[in-house]
Image (cartoon, rainbow, N blue to C red):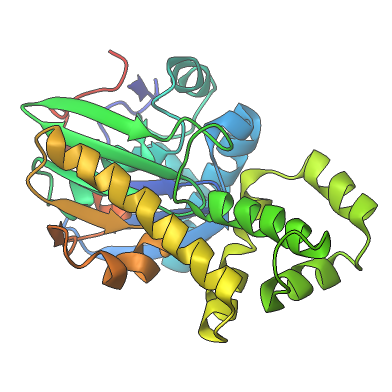
Length: 299
């Protein structure tokens, strides 16, 4: 935790930030718990760059301040709970907190732990986030354990990035005549002007969020009864089922399934002990700012 040297105890506002691979969201509440404003910015996954993440975190907070009609000086009166992707990596965690931050207090944790705190009202539980990336977390006995979430493409199974990558891989096989023709493949390859060299150049520069943008295309094509898209959704469901099953085997009694991909595939996983989250990751981040006894990722 870092403190602003001028106003270490003058806290007037609680701010929670949830930062993933695609979006960063911020929420500001006053000391009475009243909602003052919310804001958004691009993703703030720490692995994509500490400076970039800090810029997007502050951008989301300033956007929320604009909505709340707060002056810039209010930053130094905020206790901030930041729940950011890749904060579980110690080097990312320490590098981010080594940067100058304008808040009176800053507490940093992972987006997964922020989501878990929100989902279970600050209590113990287990969550699986399947958004642009994926990560599972079990908070039990005062300890935090994670699974998956080591970054795309080596991990993050069942995520939007993973689904987008698989869609492109299979679409190329359709183009080569290895797989049957597919509406999804036609749409994806048309997007690149049917220029395979352009697709290869794009892939050389693409980040997880770029792959994740194709995940909704798979859902749309599945709705249009495309067999390739339906098979890809079944694959993704199976990946999530594997992760949830492993978490249950490690002692989780119930799991909150979160994230855009998780929410859309939840009906296909109804046989598992899934629970509806009590609140979102922004509320979890605010709880993390308030409750100093909650475990720190890297003491």
